[in-house]
Image 1 (cartoon, helix red, strand yellow):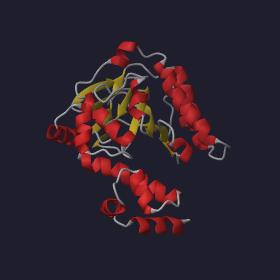
Image 2: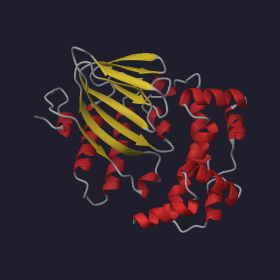
Image 3: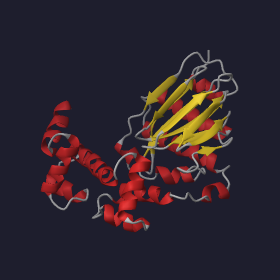
Image 4: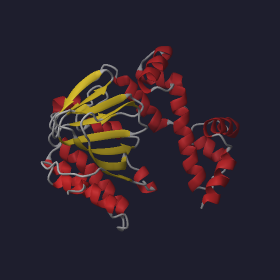
Length: 296
């Protein structure tokens, strides 16, 4: 029987006896880049296979290796065939299922990072056009195979660098075959993605929901309502989650005092930071720092 990585070498075969998935633990080096992989897996489905509706906290790019199926996101339906790709966007409800006659075999590449959206645009995928017909070319599949091999052999020196290179080579291979028309298509509500990316990139600055709404040229109340409809979270909470996540990294990896951390992630003072952190994390910043140190 063929394993997951072998299926990538010969994606005309459907002789797979089980699914395989691996989690990556991104290093600080990887997290300093535009985007990085967090999970990869090859899945064999059966007739009547159906996942969702659900939402994910990360981007999930799916490559159809064999079979047929259907993908639904934002009430739009896409019919899937071999070598098609589609993307499940974070915090956006989606579902997909197999054909009853030709169940899907697919590879899932999950990733995150502040420029993930820009990376997807290079291959013609946006939140309003999450599907790309016949885009899984052999070069892209070859680099996906490399990622699978790296996942199966975790002890290789400088693996984070090799993994990051292979990850971006996947997009480069698809981008080389993507037309300018597909890249340049503009979504009617693309301002939502621009607002989201603006918060992800500038959370450490003096920004708030009003300034973000002004940045994308949308009235604040309409902006907040549409943002919550699209991502199932208010823009204020989303910005707070970004800042708390950044604070956790600094508390875990540095000896900076709370005042310095507060200013580095966009809070005006230590008091407002501590209050927001406890509300979001359930413990105070000092308690969190102590707990992660004890864990090591």
